[in-house]
Length: 388
Ligand SMILES: [Fe+2]
Image (cartoon, rainbow, N blue to C red; front, side, top):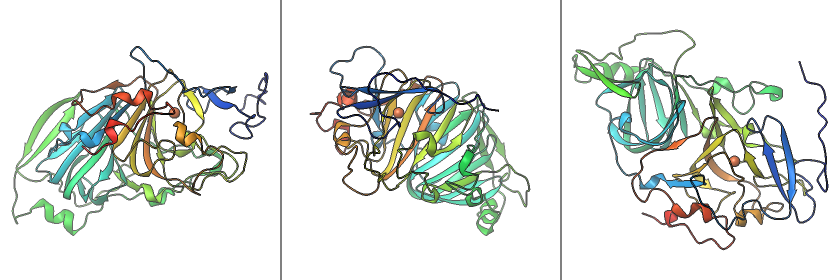
């Protein structure tokens, strides 16, 4: 079923095609609903919509330097909650070495994203090697623990009372972006069997179960990760960002929704990976100004050189609550039609949440207080971008 052929209205001076061939000396803004899928208008302004000179009140763009969260813990339930609402919990967990107990999340699926570190993930279903750049979808109720070779840092994105799904790939089909066959599941291998009795005998194990945000501890006289086999279509899956083959068009700057990797009912997770810039002379090459009026937007910068902002570094987060227009940093805007290099070189994880996010209690110095002013053409280097 369709709703027929849409016939947009046009007023004043405009381009004929969004994100391309902008009228001279204009700044294009997308006013959009439903996260780039819904009704939208493209408006052509005489000034950049981010050129504000004053800002008062609780709504503002915010940025956090998670490199400054140095607390390390052997339990993911001690991860620092950076942002949250009733349907998503966005946490940052630093750990090292081997977890000495199991955990189980009774509140929802967890999406782990390994920002730093390399090791193994043991769970009901077996073992998976994990490394930086890996996403790991952990179904609600799975018992698991990690063994890292050294220090590790992970994002943990809980789909509260929900489960993760893959997005509908629509016209490009199910095998675009990444083939579902590339998703790896745990295997029952020698390392998995060996961890059941690490010293050649049964030993007691604790399981820390999180339910409604509270922890209960269940003790077994043996390691309950003792499956000898399983079959079904429910299991943790692993996907590395380097296995994502991004959608692109050489003539059209695709919206962030083209980069959706996982969906939950009330938020999506998108991944930005390196890709060539658009080559059509009239196509814009950096993100367009927009107000994504139904979503709060969170971007975690994992690795690379971030083309829409020149003042963030790996480990930083930007948080753009719904309610105002944002867009490229002034220095990036200079390359809107002629970028300095042929391709992007960034890996970033974005969460777009339909429900308003609250900021957690964070140690002093983690938030970059001057972020709201960073769109000024003469903005100084951020305090947060200096090595702590
Ligand atoms: Fe945005």
